[in-house]
Length: 241
Ligand code: URA
Image (cartoon, rainbow, N blue to C red; front, side, top):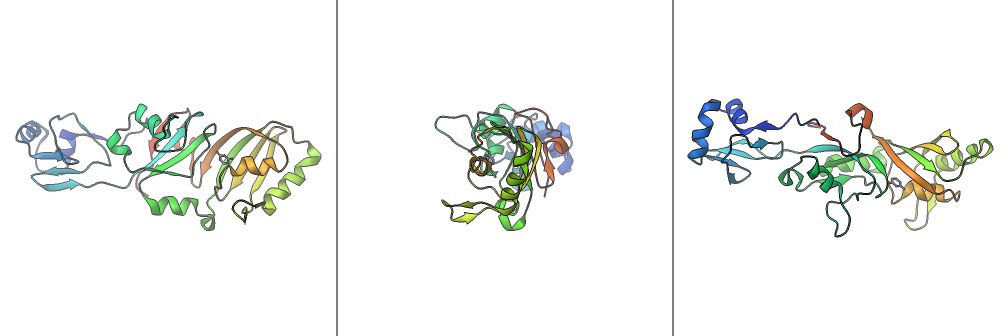
């Protein structure tokens, strides 16, 4: 998996100071290097974009904003903590992201427990708000498997209802215009520019057509295929925004 911005501590110090990689062992023995506040002891320690690195009290790298993309598996919750269920943070941890890197991340537009696909995480609140606020009109594209077939003569009615927006009493709001295409009788592609609670399930609920599978292909410019995320559990960094 892409971990391009992770570097071994000795390489990191050699690249960012006048010291050579050979000097680093001595620097560590002299306790002159701190990584995120802890005295470093291992030249092989991996330095990620989240880490603060100091040499003799001088900051070589401060904590950075982080942008991660995960191919969310089914059956895990889009939460950072949960008393019962496995979370997307647990998935990232299992796939090599350290606790330190994971701290302070939040989720940019949740997916339901049984939904799969592209999930973005960051510690940059401005970026996540820009992606999710309805007025910025960032497209989120989903493939939706439906329990009941949508017959050809019903398609126009579905498309119109999605495009016009649906009034949701609980929020006292009408959904933004959404695009619906039928890829086959049981498979729809839906494009939303917002993310209300269970939005797609509730929209098909108006037609008494239960959603039995939901997969997010993309959020704005980021897509699973464009990022090379092919299997559930894979993740990558998006780099600086
Ligand atoms: N709409 C839903 O109903 N569920 C999701 O996971 C995403 C959008």
